[in-house]
Length: 570
Image 1 (cartoon, rainbow, N blue to C red):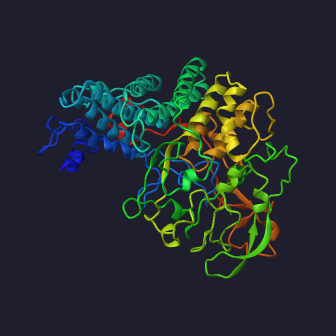
Image 2 (cartoon, helix red, strand yellow; image 1 turned 60 degrees about the horizontal axis):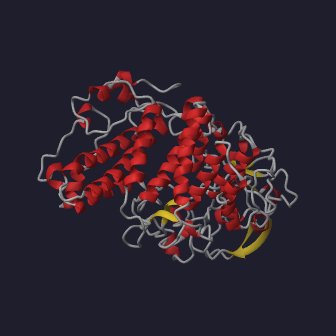
Image 3 (cartoon, rainbow, N blue to C red; image 1 turned 180 degrees about the vertical axis):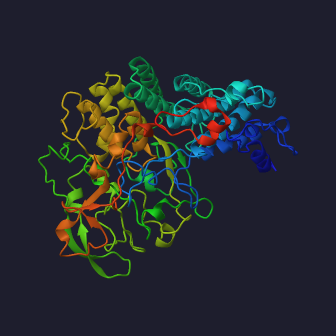
């Protein structure tokens, strides 16, 4: 019955009509007044907040890793296009956050009347709810810019929100920061948990939000003063985690993404636990089964440094990317096959590249089974290896809903990256800052250190930033490859979504170098360009328009409230 009450109290109330906004208590046995009578009930209601963190997804649903392929890291056959190219009538990106904001406000409004809770407990749960509410508003601002700040369960007297113009994004974000600061000051429960919302998760979310807002103000809004204020807040949140002594990098980079159990992994601030037969996902299946994977782009592949710490353009190491032919049995029941081995190519690069892609190229007509079972093919030739684990049977690896590896949600490496970037963007980064952030990440994989005084200029720097900031951004890219759509949101806040334009940047639609082997293996299943690289565009192109930095307001919302207005260019 408690679950029934939770569903009733947390009913979806999207901003799609005035009636939706004004729904009151459900006409049934439970109401807000008689449900919130104990901390157990409060906690059960707050458990809905965890749906925000998809991880690897549930059963057959997509998660926040690998599947977010609107970026320059992954090549999709025919190209992943922009989220919106035309203005929709409705959009989950608008509706869903407001549903969740109402859910948070329901809890916040109920807490003062829960006599079973001490004041400290009430503050804790209010902090959890405000953390969630602030993050949902942030998602709206990130997607739409100006929006509505909602801190009550709306009723018919709230006409300024129901029918007024959208509020400026900056004023909404100021309210978001108030919520985040309240959360980090008042959440006191579950401090030692790695699977619950707690103060360390709050600090990690604050760092993420503040870094986005700081860099967005710097590069998009051109407001240096406001940018530095938010960047300083990001740095403070990172330092709280870094100085806590509770977290450290896991020596095994790939184990953060393919472990059957992340419990006790000191890099994890919060993770999602999957249990075979109870809660499973399909990320491994989609990256090793018969469905073609969205492989790494040539642009991303070339972004990994060589072992001498230098980029492709300046290294003195062997830059060959062709690989060599070999014959071998992949255990898929096809006997010996002639395939292209790139292990020699990978051995000269940052070891994180070997954790991300297979040492054997795989593409239509030339599939490869990593650990046996079904053969995989990739849109670019590069297999996606990061999430796979050969301790799982082939049957369970290659089936929807039976993958049971744990998913990181917030982890220490992200914090170190956020810290280094915030410091660099404020112009105050030192070698000591690099040593306790970027260089820890490089130490883990045996790469040379980065310093403020000895940065190798990279001719590929196409972002118009300093060599040091370029290298910090490179580190972010290779550390968080395939993770939580980070590359797209980073390009958005750096005002660099133009890099997703395939006309101007063709390497984002290219893959592995296979042309030299046309006489030895079947290349009929792939488009090979004049330079010998797989081209996955399939005749399509993705062209950037400045309006894409924000989503369009759904037309249904403007029909209900013409004062809402539309975003520029739409």
